[in-house]
Each structure stands twice: as C-alpha cells, then as structure tokens.
Image (cartoon, rainbow, N blue to C red):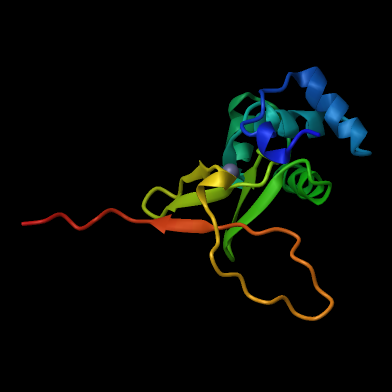
Length: 149
Ligand SMILES: [Zn+2]
C-alpha cells in the first residue's frame, strides 16, 4: 500500500498527463480548460485566480475571466486542485493534492508548504455526534519580527 504522504512532493505533469487527469475526473479537456489546468497543475504551486488569469493573458490567449474562474471551480470541485480560503475575498488554488499544511506570509501573501509529518496534535477536540473529520489543515500565519533597536 502506498501512503498518501509518499506522493509529496508530486512530480511535474506534462500537458498530455494533465489532459488524462481531467478525463479521469469526468472533465472534457477543452482547449481553454486545459490551458488553465496546465498553468496550475504543471508543477506544485499556489496561485490566486487573478495570478492565473494574468499568466493566461501574458501568453496572449484569449480566455475570459469567467472561464478562468469557472474552470478553477470545476477543478476544485473534482478534487484536482485544492482551494484554500485565506480570507473572504481571496482563494488560493493549490496543485499539491496530498494533505499538507501551510505557512502564510502575511506581508507577501505567499503560501509555503509544510509537510504533514512536521505537525502533530497532542489534543484534538471531540467531534460532534455523527460527524467524522474529513481533513485537517493548519495555516501558520507569519509576519516579520519587529526590528530591534
Ligand atoms: Zn500547498
């Protein structure tokens, strides 16, 4: 049995491999969908929808903002990427699917991965009746230490 944790970090994916992943998740790999998926899924990364849109536009592709947003929603709904809600206005899409935690740099907005084995819980709350924990994600928010002197 392979553990999920061995999938971390995951290898980079070719365009063909990404198209196959989309199909395996019941998604038709249309040109626009594939373009968005490729930017995000080629290698492990964290990007906001606006950052992905900027990359699409830089490459001269004519893809609407709505298409980028809709595609990201579909990718997240099927579990191909993970959507991380940092604050109500901003989601970051994470192409590393294996469970892991994050440092969030509040100054730059950057997310850094923390391998799952680097965090352990000595206490965990009792879950509400009839519920099970689907996932646990820790975000450690970072800010610069104030300069001394
Ligand atoms: Zn991550």
